[in-house]
Image (cartoon, rainbow, N blue to C red; front, side, top):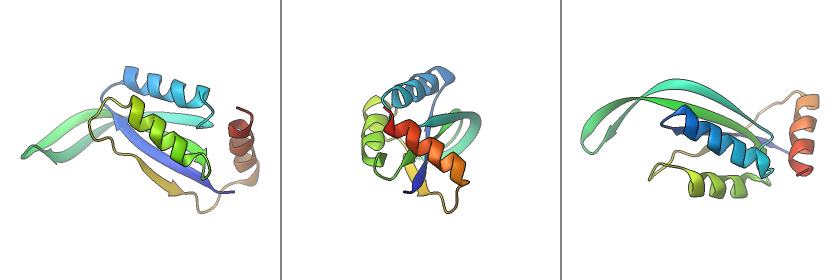
Length: 105
């Protein structure tokens, strides 16, 4: 099985914690890392510089569609960035833990 690393961003820590808790409790992600970042992007014709919170979620390729749907449904942004990349290589014991954690839910 393949592990996906899924990334999204939200405006604040509270939203990040809510979203992380929801997807882990639902068994859609084994774990979520939360980091504070600064983002630059054009929006409504103006360059934005905003503080955001990045979530990195670990899931399986099989759970990804449900994870994406849950993020989109519970995300506070109109157009959330939801980006998934397959892990090219993963330490086998960690991969086993991720997959077994998701399967157990």
